[in-house]
Length: 304
Image 1 (cartoon, one colour):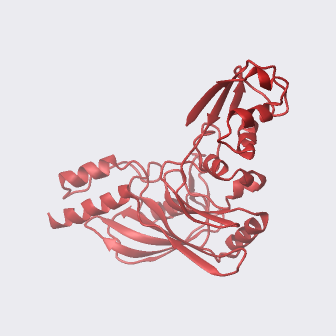
Image 2 (spheres, one colour):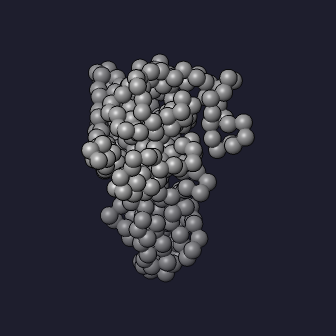
Image 3 (spheres, helix red, strand yellow):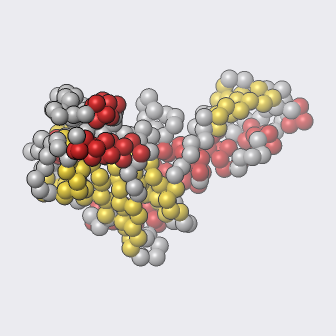
């Protein structure tokens, strides 16, 4: 976050706020400045004004230039693929208006403001890392939404779960709102259809790395389904149950597990039909450093 302050020169007296900003902050495009005005991130003597309001000169401008870096994997005129870090909220909401992926996207391309949800057609949880697709045109948006509905988009995740799995499988259980805790979801008979396929990637003494393929996209689907079959994700603060240190655990592994404060889930592969060319495209993203470190320590613990 960058807070820029400046006083309106007298020679700009009588000009509109948006015009003054363009003169005073030439490093930023007019469209980006307009986005910030509408978002209330421009204050004139402490008050958020509309872009068309005229200034007298001498006012103090405070510009909240929220410049959030984006890890862009691919971009063209109709599509954007980003690698979202763990800890980054996707959509602004109560308590999370700032520092979101949407804010970062609008900073990168203010034209996304004309699209539903700034072009985002699916989401991943705040503490999940990995690949996310963003439409840059309405045509692309409609195409990606249609592909999601047809279940033709490939979405694969890597997840580290508690327990020693013997084989892969499929969880086909409906998911709905938890009957007591409104912040959670749960397997419920009256819920919406949810199908999760998983296969083994690597087994450790008391943990298993699995590759998960989503057929549907319910909120917290992987986390709910894995907990339902008694293989909750490592670090899951909501569905993982009370933290218990596994037996035969080296000091290094104990420290790594204790310090891993998010669900061990990474969106590793994304495949889709390009909305403009019709060509099937696929992207993969390696595990982030925190999950890779955990796997390294788990492997070392096997040797103890």
